[in-house]
Amino acid sequence: MAPDLGLILPVVQLGGRPVLGACELRFGAGQVTALLGPSGVGKSTLLRLLAGLMPLPAGARILPGDGGTLAGRIAWMGQQDLLMPWLDLRGNVALGARLRGQKPDLARAHALIQSVGLAGREKARPAELSGGMRQRAALARTLMEDRPFVLMDEPFSAVDAPTRHRLQGLASGLLAGRTVLLVTHDPLEALRMAHRVLVLRPGPNGAVAADLALPASPPLRAATDPAVLTAQAALLDMLADAA
Ligand SMILES: Nc1ncnc2c1ncn2[C@@H]1O[C@H](COP(=O)(O)OP(=O)(O)OP(=O)(O)O)[C@@H](O)[C@H]1O
Image 1 (cartoon, rainbow, N blue to C red):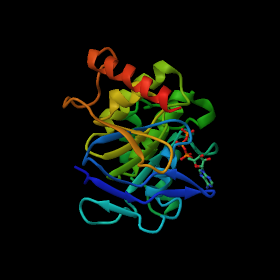
Image 2 (image 1 turned 90 degrees about the horizontal axis):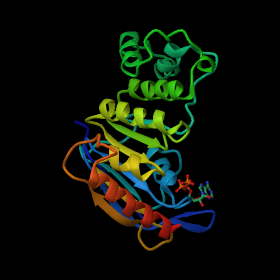
Image 3 (image 1 turned 180 degrees about the vertical axis):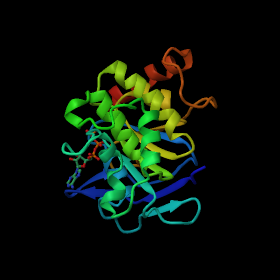
Image 4 (image 1 turned 90 degrees about the vertical axis):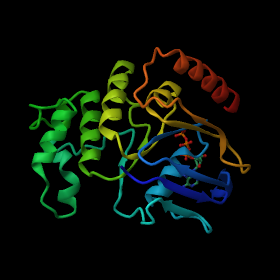
């Protein structure tokens, strides 16, 4: 199982204004932690800081539970599939290794393509795939990296609701055992997939408005689960108040 992940942040300033309040967070080992909050609260900023896509402010610390660093141990999946239009599906899934000048493990690529339900489409270019298929390809490419930490920034928001529902199920199974941060605007997605939901709030006075540990039952939860529906209503209220 992947280690847990600690993050200590002072107030994060962007463009001369505070975005994320100071916080000390620990994301559970092998768990999915969902990050919700109003638009602009700093959810993507938090992921970008962890991914090294922006400089850490003075005093910030990233603390993987095994004492190592995050370098080379993060996979990223975003809202856009970022598939290369000139590569076929297999080429896209195996892209990371090729970019690093390594020989891709094509057997692994094939197995992942199968597990996301795209067997037989290996030669298809992205333009020949539906939006949901492209996100499944992006999921396979993310998992191809086989990293313990996975950062997901609204990974399913660009697809229709039934496709999103299926992708949540697929991703939950395939991400098991990894330490995942999932940014989403969708309370139901958070409640179905996550072990824990953090609601972020704007301003400098502490980044976390609510910290919900979800019932012990592992993801994926049923959308019809009464506990999920009650928590969904509470989260929607909380997000509406914070917006
Ligand atoms: N490089 C930057 N320079 C200045 N301001 C920035 C920069 N990056 C982000 N911001 C601002 O920081 C705030 C937080 O942005 P961020 O994208 O993290 O929010 P978010 O919670 O992910 O929003 P959304 O839910 O709309 O995607 C926003 O007001 C944004 O305009």
